[in-house]
Amino acid sequence: MKISTAARGLAAALVGLSLTAAPKFAFADIKDYEFQLVEPTVQTGPEKVVTVRLVNRKTGKPVPDAVIFASRLDMAPDGMQEMVTKVTSMPGTEPGTYRFKANFSMAGRWQLSLGAKVQGETGTVENKLVVTAKQ
Image (cartoon, rainbow, N blue to C red; front, side):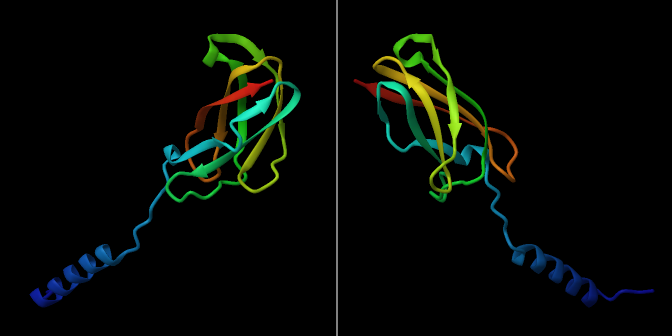
């Protein structure tokens, strides 16, 4: 069967049009997400709560339902990384917020290291946030 030049041209034009008119999907990169401290300071003492927000940096919107699988709190910013305290996860009060209870035994800068999985994304969000404990 012979295909005319006009038919081939029409087919090529339709393929080109479909490629240029197709919707462009903007996939997020795991680097587009970050944790932010809601309040950068806490009082020293037992069972103090630190709240963080996980946001998409491109949209500025909070990211709910992330799975926090790693958390560590130590005094690395003040050169005392061996000064570690237990961190207990608590339910957030708003979508996209995550709360942690810990014992801030002394004043100074504490580093909260977090690792999380965002649903629908590959890779891990990892951030180190500095919380200042004051007396």
